[in-house]
Image (cartoon, one colour):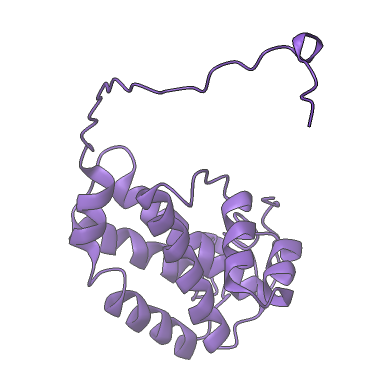
Length: 187
């Protein structure tokens, strides 16, 4: 459900890149967290949320980012931009060649700056105010970068696969006689 980024004063860049306006409105109108998880997993095409710990971690990461946006009364465009920034930071840090915390932080700063300072000639859009940008940096520092090593371990360590074969003896009941061979019992 990704839509094209919109441009103009106070918008642009990653706004609507990963979550479109309709999806964000649907998430806002959905009261149950479990339903929100299903919507988000479907939107991001994350399969096996219930039985894959990596999928659970990824979706929970995204959900907590949206909760932060709600707590700070971000508009839908700001939610979309923040969500996309963090999605890109996560992908940059843990998909393909893993990067260290400092490289990831530099990437995050570049993405955040691009959406904080209004400079059309440099392709920067002022989606966030300075106060909001400070709140974002504080939140990310206390959540994502505090747990960066755990995320890296989870998403860059190849998980061992253990194949096992088990032989089971299953007893089945005897096949009943066909009904046409049955006889009535006399009382």
